[in-house]
Image (cartoon, rainbow, N blue to C red; front, top):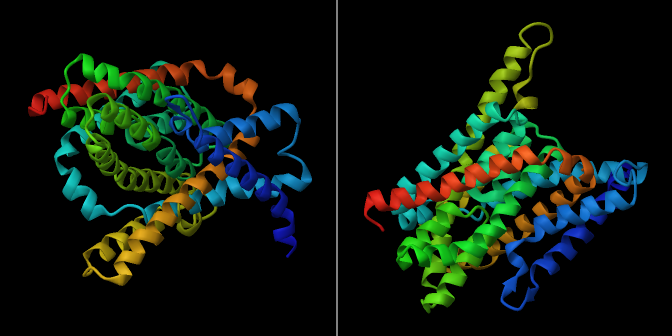
Length: 358
């Protein structure tokens, strides 16, 4: 009971901000939809604003335990729940033809991040987060990877800010760019699904194309499927990072105290994989009341809850972030994010051309 009391106020603040952020993300001004920005970005910005106005807000005795719990545990729960929204069989069967483009863009982005990490002397954890966020699925990939590499709140906030910046730019300019270079409807769906970071921005860019070309939602459906296929890369990448971290921790612990695998391995990633396998197995069952209820209600609810939990965690991270320090240190990560973004877009188009899609 004492533990709940200690954490309740901080958690409630994060719930309130996540709720407000979700509402803000649903607003439109003319043709511009705030969904492009997304609830997690609103939450992290509001969190940073609160901390900038009320000094030591997150560090106060009443708030600290709940905010820390939200930024760590709630974030991990969000990733596990996200697993239930991924049907490996369906995504691969529909998005299979996009796999060569997806693999190429991910490889180039991660390589670019690794090279620029050394050249620009960017923090290693920030580089990993920018690399996976740019190449896989923006905020969700960062949310899944951050606990695996033990990134702190400021490193997460910095990475999210970089990804957000290029998300918005991509959503605004890619439809016009695709039209200017003569992409087909299928070509733009593949381009949006592989070259735009976050799902909300993929949706915005594809919807804008559908409106321009009067394609009645066809491009949106294709781009979303490509994006979901790309999201599956979270599984091998986070598992690889988890094993690397475990191996390094064991090396560091060879002298002196023993290292406990149970303590250092990020088990939530394993639960994430199990969750996605459960949804995949359910999809193989004969169609009936159970499968309909599972897909129409459980998976849809899991998708909403995962997004809400990520917004809660981003609020907590924002509350623990000094916005002045973030701005001071932001130049190099932004340069890295820009290079990754340009490289992904270029490789996506080149691969389409090589494979004869464009």
